[in-house]
Each structure stands twice: as C-alpha cells, then as structure tokens.
Length: 456
Image 1: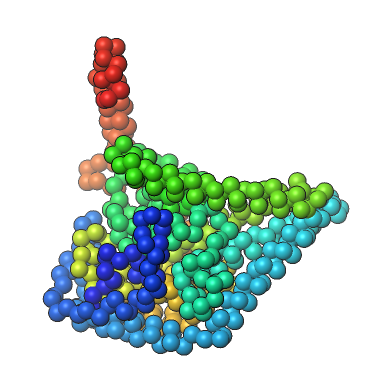
Image 2 (image 1 turned 45 degrees about the vertical axis):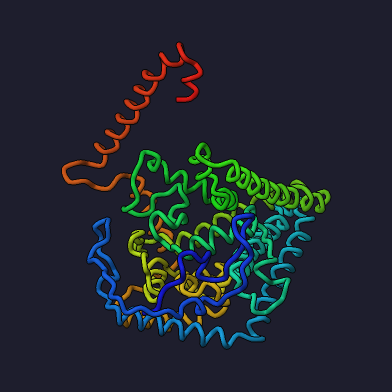
C-alpha cells in the first residue's frame, strides 16, 4: 500500500511558513513524499466510535490501493498538461476582477445621485463591488494561496507573495487552512474547521449548553466571516483557554501574530472605509455604505459556499485513531467522503472559486481550479465504482441541509429513556449548582486570605 503524507509534514500540498514556528520549505509535489509502500493489512471497524456506520469498512485494502493509484494517475495526467491556456485563464480572471472593482468604485462616485427616488449608481456600484470582492477572495486569493499557480513562476501570482483582500493575513490563513485543515480533513479533534470552534456539526462532538445558541452564533459568524476567520487563524480561542499554561516564548509569539492581524485589519479598514469612500467625493457617505454592504454580502456568500462543501447531511467525520498509519488511498477516500459539491453552471463555479467542486478540491488542493470540472466526472466514476457516495446538490438544498443540522445539533443527542428537554434541564441545574458551590467555597477564602484567593 502507498503511505499517506507524513503527519509531521505541514501539508499534503505545498508547505508554507508561518511566523517563527516554521522555516520556509521548498515547493514539493505531494507524490514525491508517497513512494513508500506497506503490505501490512489495515483494520477498519464496521462502526465508528460514535456508533455510526464506518463508510470505509466495506472497502478492501486492494480497493483502496487501486483508488490511490487511479487518483495519482489522474493528478499526474492533469498536472503534466498545465500550460498556456491555464495561465491565460487566471490572468484573465485577475484582470476582469480588477477592472470590475475599479469600474464599480468609479460608478460609486455618483452613488448619491437620485433618479425618481432611487440611487441607481449605488445599486450598480454595490453589486459590482460585491462581485469583485467575491472573485478576489474565492477564485483568486484562495486558490493562489493554495499554490495552484506557483508552477507559472510568476511572482505576482505566487502563493508566497499574494496578500488578499481579507482581514486574515495570508501567512496565518495558509497555516490554518492549507497545513491543518487539508491534512486532517474532518478528523474530530484535529480539524478545527469542524464548526470553527463555535458550532456543533456532528453528533460525535460533545454537547454543552453553549451550543443551544449556535443558530445565533452561526448567523453572526456568517455576517462577520472575515473577522471570524482572522480570529480562528490566530487561534485566539486556544490562547484564551491555555494562556495561563503557556511559556513566555509562546505568549510572545501570539502577541506578534496578534499584532500582524491587527495591522492587517487596520489596513483593510483604512482602505475600505476611509480612503476609497473619500475618493468618491460628494458621494463619500453612500460609497461607504456600499462598501459595508459589499463586505457583508461577500462574507455571507463565502460562508455559505464553505459550509455547503463541508457540513451537509451525509458528509462524514473521522476519529483520530482512524488516521494512524493512514495510507495514501485512505487519505484520498477520507477527502472524498468528507466533502460535498454544489451543482450549477459556469457562473456558480467561478463565483464559488470552484469550491462548488469541493470533493475535487480536497482530493487535489494544488490543482488549478479551472481543471476541477474536467476531473469531476472521473472522480465520481471512481467513487461510484467502489460504492462510495458522491455528495452533490444545488446550493439551496445543500444550504438547507446545513441549517437543519445547525438547529438539530444545537440540542443534545437523543438518549434512551430521556428527552432532550430533560438533558438540557439537568445541564442547567448542574451548571447553576456548580456556580453556587464555587462561590460558597471561595467566599471565606477571599475574606481571610485575599492573596490565596487570587491564586485559586
């Protein structure tokens, strides 16, 4: 069997450096790290730890090895055929995006002008600016930073140089997304993209009272998605939880990364909400509202596309133990089972950054995005030939499936002999009792030994 990417390597695709944690690595094709073979049989239990069926249980070692060979061969075929047409595609998209943004900004200089009670320039400029920002984030920024166009050797379109129109610095995003998420796709306890630390999106995730409000958290997260991703990439939640146990060096590194994020946000705010509106002259106030609207719509669209690729019904999650000694073929199968597609035409694929082909993207994250439509039928055929479900559907259906999960999983799992309401009520009583007991224990300590109370 072919061995999967080394778990000590930062990414199954192009390694990236981030701050002082890593040194810059050379660009390495994934296949070059996958030449080792193993004949040791693999055990795949019929059920996962959650009790749900294991979709890989019915596959033999020989089947999985064949899947790995077929997908490696398909990847080599496409990557060896990259050329002028691909380079022309990404340059054309970048050029169109820039003209669209500049044109929209120009239209917004007239955004204060009313025609029969309506400001047509505001609507037109806002629509154009929204589309430009979506294109920059999705089809350009996301894919450039995956290294999909590094083969062109163009420093202007290279993963090490690109800085996108987003609150999260590219270096931190590449670490959290390319290195962590794509390596540990949908592995519970390893892939932080599973709910971004604020959503429960799988029954195997432990439930707590916090998740009762997750429909609200989800909406807020979608509205301010770029800032949520910046906090997520910074690992702000982990810092808050662990800061008392962190070394001085770790705290210093976090502060340096936090300053980088704040600097990026400051630059974005100045550009979007000060300089560019001022360039609109008399229409500055309306240009400002247009930019705010465009950023919110971009956040909502980006969030929707991403959740539809990762959280709909039928998307699988995996236990940490299941990836120990994972083979190359198993890594491929996990990517395919842990992703879902959005059906649609060329416009949908373009505006989603071709993440409407999320299965293909997770199988080949460094393949030029314009090639995903080409390989999709062949990947689907491989999956169906091996009895693996190819999850796809229109945007509205995939989104509805996700929102259904968000609401249902806000509640605890069903337990034999207990209603969900009784479980929630018991958790509330336990929380209140623990809070009350904690106050009772701490009260006399605070009065007599204030120094010790601070230590407690």
